[in-house]
Length: 163
Image 1 (spheres, helix red, strand yellow):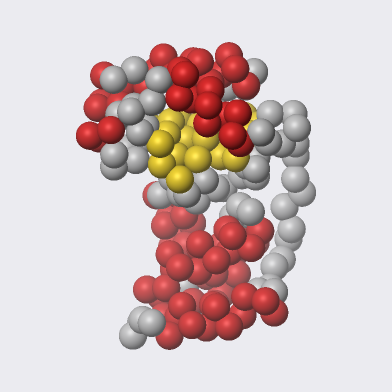
Image 2 (tube, rainbow, N blue to C red):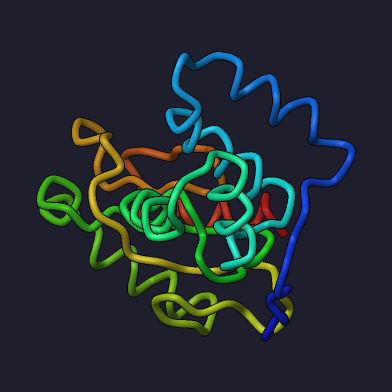
């Protein structure tokens, strides 16, 4: 499901006040990079290069500074993702509790691999590093929701709810 990335973006009128509000919370403008990346991702569904350039222009930063922040965190999508972004934690605690087995189950169930999106655009599946839920592994993040202590049955129930 290729999506054409726009060459240049501007903040839509609907979010300009939110952008200004986010910046106003910081004594140094550049400190608002995370909130503005969140706003951009929510606005466009992912962070195309033009969105990161817009954040850089807005905060008077260099583009590589914004790109560095966006690539550091797994919460930012640098490519288009499906309506439901499934991120399975593969760090030690979750791996010991069966994360690899769950990931293979999801691959089989959805017919896609790591970083791929289903043909209908509904699900994107990714392996990620620590989701900071080490006491509840294996865990998976779907959008902004966390699911812990997972097994195949629980994962199937989650997928059913998301359809």
